[in-house]
Image (cartoon, rainbow, N blue to C red; front, side, top):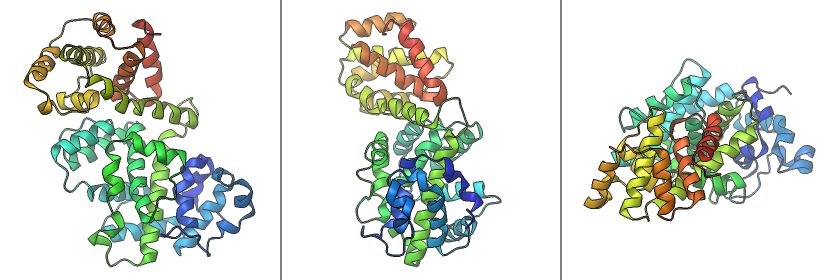
Length: 364
């Protein structure tokens, strides 16, 4: 049987990225095995599971078979119809579905919530609204920047996992670590997507097809942003991504717990560093990224110190020595540089920038 040409990209997807789709094909909502799944009886599946890449073609065939449609295009259009979206191409329809889905859990978001989401998607939108986030994402996509849509795929996957009574990917490395790299993902994980009013009149088969389509879209977005974009292998790019996004948690742990003077120097370091690349960051974004705290939640003394830091004329070298003298370790300084390197640079360049500055400042 011929593979649907829209699913041919499955042939170069890494095994772990198939986990959610395989779970949808093999398990019922309750977690029990599906008797109708041909994948479960496949010789290749039995031999190679969980190395899903070995039987990627069979996964593609089973996606269409279980959907009861004749092609992925039909599945996609059926889901788009339920969501009330259209498009002139497969890519446009998929993007419109993504935004229709993301709009649901963000309906009650405040501006502060959108600021946090923008930071974690590595965006600097013109307005901290859903429309602002959407426009910034589409612009990044046009620029071939991979990081934002990789993280969007993670948010979509977090909601798709809500299809099951219990997370069938709990033991899988990408979903017990990768999803946790985003602080915002918690809201998406808890959001009961398939219980929303818009889907109340949908049949069980329609809900299943929607979950499958969303998982395929997320897989395509994760794959597109990596495949063929640089000299690095996909696995190497994933490693870089995980290395630097985890810093979004580690840096605030030492930065926020520091004394007011150290807080000021950390902020000043970020101002000077990003100034070197003509990439000033809005104060709210910088505070959330460096300290996981809103500017308004700092004490008056701390706010004054941060405002003074914005006017600093000191060099990175001078600020580095001050921070090291205050008790921050070289490893922590490197973590700080890693977060700043991640702030707006393309992922494939991050590690070189990170190493360059670590060496320049005598940290390695």
